Image 1 (cartoon, rainbow, N blue to C red):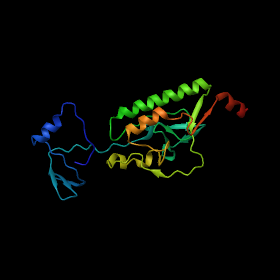
Image 2: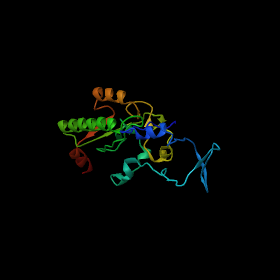
Image 3: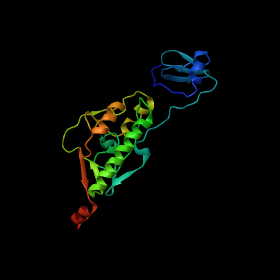
Length: 202
């Protein structure tokens, strides 16, 4: 089937499929009837029970509302920086895993990159840092290029991805791991100190 591969520790699903006790069908639901599900392809799935499990709705930052100087930040209006920060939002880090590999692979890269940035800020006396795109035009591309319904339904609520580093979200662990080792922390970053901001405000 054309969905992402499921990894199952005991492999019992694959045993059930090979025994003929389970069938995986990839199709679009046309409607429900008295005996099951009619598919758009014309096929019919007989069913005694139908479990509706397609209502997942993705939310950026888990739905947490973020504001900066009293103004609400809408993630869908911002580009993602190195897959773990939002454009022009200081000191905010988040983790989004890969769609084609273990979630924890990017979680590890994100944690290391975050720790490296915080250590750099501490060593230079900075209190805040944020990625800044500036006036450079940046074409957009889909950050999560999979056709799962729960992703397609949520694209309007997710941050934007650019077409080139460091603003593009990739689904390539090996490329990201290499970049992490050789990235410049200062790349497209703005650093500042709280006391400087307070002096300007005064």
